[in-house]
Image (tube, rainbow, N blue to C red):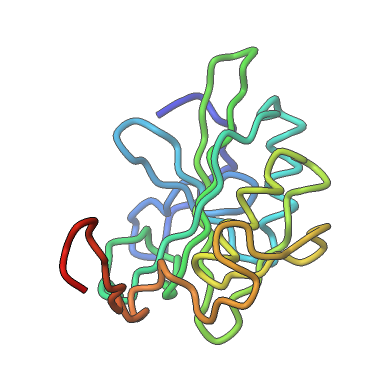
Length: 174
């Protein structure tokens, strides 16, 4: 794991150590990368705190639909939801990377926008909105970016119908 700041971690009642925390959020590890699991209410505050610590560049923001994997492995204390918003931040001065995974429920797929803190996320949040139907509060222009404005549905959701488009080949009999 990288040297991201962790909060003090008390032992659980059964004598087993609790999961490490960063800014009060459960932390995991994915192939040596620190993964923080903030809830939706703390997401923006955690990103601000990490920005103050040097994680000033957001290099990626994407959505994930876990419709077919509701029982995926998550750290203790993180309740799985259908959707996730995944954010990767860099601290260029100290050569560190950190990932945030925010659980987003299907019933109310809304997360705070990072646009005010990281203006480069504007298009990434629009893509997540367009493809998954996850909304971002306080986004300056939350409109479709890949699909036509009158398109119905969100094509990267696992329950979205694949459909078919007839193809007319050149020179083929119609």
